[in-house]
Amino acid sequence: MRPGAAPKPLLLLSIRVEEEAALNEHASFARFLGVTAEDLPRIELGTSPLPPLDLDDWAGIVLGGGAFNASDPEESKSETQLQAERDLARLLDEVVARDFPFIGACYGIGTVGRHQGAVVDRSYPEPVGPVSVELTDEGAADPLFAGLPRTFAAYGGHKEAISRLPDHAVALATSAAAPVQAFRVGHHVYATQFHPELDLDGILTRIAVYAHHGYFDPSEQDALGAAAAAVTVSHPMTILRNFAARYRPVGATQS
Image (cartoon, rainbow, N blue to C red; front, side, top):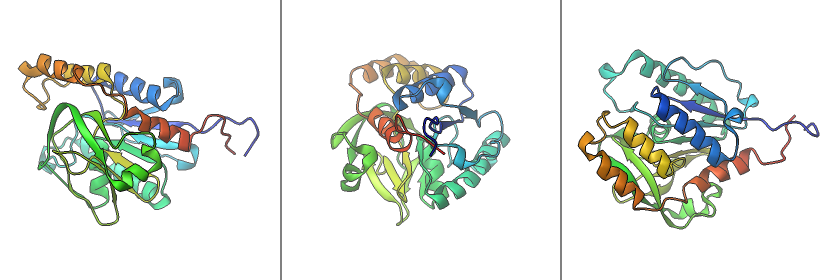
């Protein structure tokens, strides 16, 4: 530890190619992690391969969502998607082996789940909008969920989900429609089905950008926006604040 040295940064991995959604995702993660966008470097896996990463350079890694699905038929996946999957699988090999701080949201839960042997399929889709999430006993005791009520509202929307976790994974949250809303591997590798970075502005942006991506009938856009606005979503962001506080605390120094 060098006195006065700057803390290591967090890293955002993004698969979004839609500029408005990608910029909103980046700004939202930065806001709720409590850092500036400049202090949250972003690598765009939706457009280019993952460059070599030295985990020792980072305090933790965040993986966002997007239009890729781990359960897409292999023959339907673009070379960009396949490249992203290969790159993330190699990265997760090291992340899991080192129990390195990592949180993946939406696409991230399918990616980490598939890597760890979970069943990821189309059995439990959820419509775009608010969802009621309930913590398990393990989730209620987990430091990343500290300060959250046992049941809280979040924004989600997905075609695939985890229908079965491997025995070594710890289920942290569930919902009526999707049995696995969050889980942990080891002590520091996390994934959520819902979006901890989404507030009302964020979900309205996603609804507009992805109106023609098969998540819902485009004619439902206004109704989905109204349904999202009718529910107060304020608790999931605490997860990101806890992640940053745990792995990149304010005033921390690094060697």
